[in-house]
Image 1 (cartoon, rainbow, N blue to C red):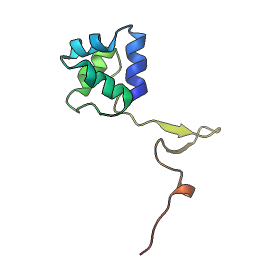
Image 2 (cartoon, rainbow, N blue to C red):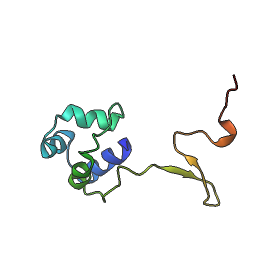
Image 3 (cartoon, rainbow, N blue to C red):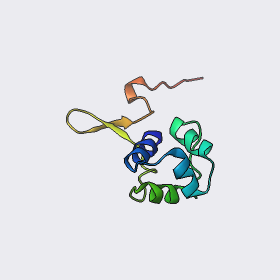
Image 4 (cartoon, rainbow, N blue to C red):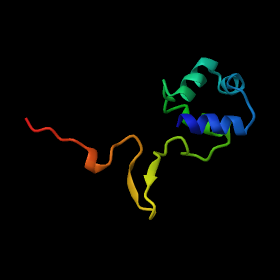
Length: 89
């Protein structure tokens, strides 16, 4: 999500401060979103998407990785099944 916000903002040629003013929030909040240290409140997602010219749901989609054949391997941030560990007590 953080790269999506930054890339869309840069494509629109607006600063973090301008985006923050449009949304009525602090520029520190936008900075935190782009750094990945804070998430966007669910009630604000639609306004952020609209301000950045993104399609509805663009910030809610989870990226996934694709194999060379185009088959989904795993969700980004989640290890492939072979690397998952289960612990038995």
